[in-house]
Length: 250
Image (cartoon, rainbow, N blue to C red; front, side):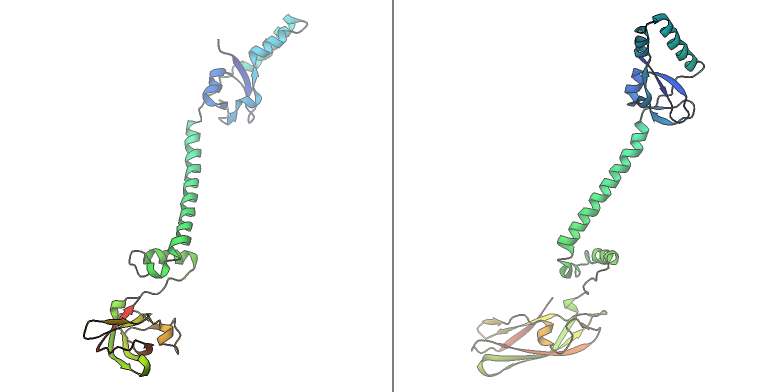
């Protein structure tokens, strides 16, 4: 026969009896049949069998037994057995919430690492990518940073190009640069490729806006339909070149 225990509800102080299998099923958690409160029965658990054994060791065995059983019968009179309820539903509510918080924390941490080690260091290149630019815009709207301006090299127009040979291989370049886009964009980098009749070529270093626009704020954008004259010089070898090509670089 399964061992029987006594416990009392800490909320309404009602006394109930329950069996060992009830405790094992609910891991000690039970629900009061009177006030329906959930509590840990093992906090105030008393074994009826052990109490009976203690009573049998008293000097007056018969009197101790009568006292014990009389008290138990009085407490248990007209009292229903405790309502046993497993913690399945409680666990379903508690554990998914903890799991959700853990998952959200992990996702936020991974996003922060991705931003710090990839997005921000490569922001200038990614800002020109139509797939990544919305991501940068959304991120900077939250973090308060600034997305690099959009630049479309194919929407610049170069005209009035002049390459003049000076003494000691010095070459001077002058050209007009027009922004044909409908948005303001940064000035591009520029380089020149010289060629001769035999197919030989000489490529200049890449010149930045800071080098060919020294008098202008280099963060200034060229406005839509704006035309700007730029010029720079470079040293070439002693060969004679009959052709040239200007390349714009992002």
